[in-house]
Image (spheres, rainbow, N blue to C red):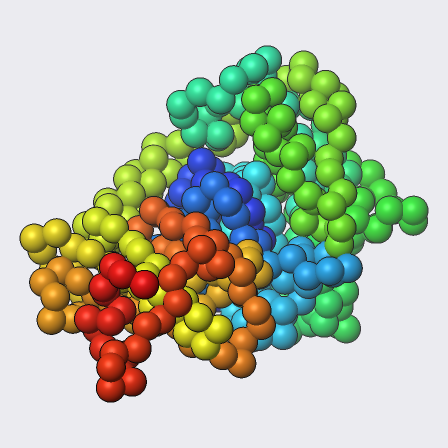
Length: 389
């Protein structure tokens, strides 16, 4: 059996994350790496909780000036994580790999190796799905809500790559030093001369990548407000792209056999997340004191103790992440945490959460009272907690 993994980068995907994760677990990928591109809709907190549960490996990955975060993340994965796996699928959270029964992913790879020997990559074409005429987001899985597609697969591909042969990864294709690049139709991958992420001709083969690009008009309107992950700046998607896939001609039900097991996977994940939240979620988070060298905060648990020592996640100005353990105090239900600010880059505002809880606190540190010493010069718990000063 090949050691398989999925690698993705993610921002503001909270409504879709559990479905996508449950799907890839169901179809045979035991290890899932998600680069957290710093969300503001609760996705980052959800990713941190899933990482704590061991369901994914989360890597904090904020935008950097003039650097496309997606390609940068993929190549970080190549340099630091790929060696643990034999084959890795790189995809987005609106993409679902559908392998033609009775094959599965392991069988697809086995057929490619039987036909070509050393395989560097298997490219899988997009099958584009549109809005199915939906104006609003409604309950249900993406896999069951959208079923209308183009008659032919797209020539654009996504890639399952062999970690032994690849030295660089673009957003869609891999660069290899050895081995064959093949299609899911078990033919050599001939790249389009002008656009190398495309096949020279559409071939569906034994696997396709369902690409739920627009979803409903409401969901598309949210998506076009986000910067594209494969561009270094603030480039956005074109709103007009929605109309190109709004009325696709063919119904495709290939994803429907996956719906029931994916729903069961989501239920399992949600149960685990709910249990973690019950174990660690505080009744309140406060930042009590802040000065140039250190900040102090508390978690309060009313009439109870957390099932384990809470871990506090602090994100400074959306681009630097720190995790610190909270410690129990002599004050009933009060847990103290502190972060050293000295020798770190200046932080004017922070977002604070407990790993495993979805609640967040946004704090402007300029509005927080400074640390007050006791008469003997010590910074006691009483001086941190007192309300004067």
